Length: 212
Image 1 (cartoon, rainbow, N blue to C red):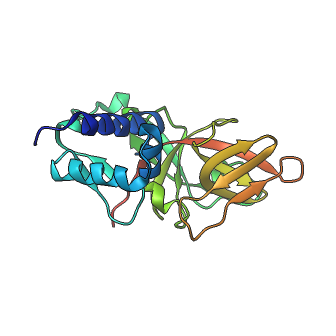
Image 2: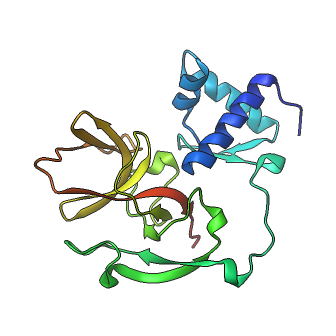
């Protein structure tokens, strides 16, 4: 791999930190904001340079489609002993009004290495739809979720509104909660905690992709 400039190293470290802290790479806009660029285009130019130098791979069509490569990628780990693996239940379509981990919602379970995730998850949720496409979360993916009852702005959460369970980015301003999609074809969901039946079901801590 070609030698990186100081700015490219800075951006690469920012990408690593975002993946380590949230489980997902940053958007161009987030990189631009963090580093004081005037536009996301400047971030894009640096990302393309990093891709040409073999440090990252960029997936077309998604704002978070950045993958670390080579020595910058997560180090490969030896085969994990069975005793260290954990069993995670896979939640399919959630029945209206039932707890998310209720027996009728469970499709199967997966044996996984907990070191794969930013924090220890409690279950896997099968993603439905394309509302989080630009965060790199696709229809059919398995989202690793840690049960929580609170979240910070910008985190990706699993939320229940009435009888619907959805995956969105969380933002709270005053008493108003907004659930933000990562796809311009979808609308922001505004939640009034006083009027709406709302609950946080968990925080996204990683992703497993099933290939068909």
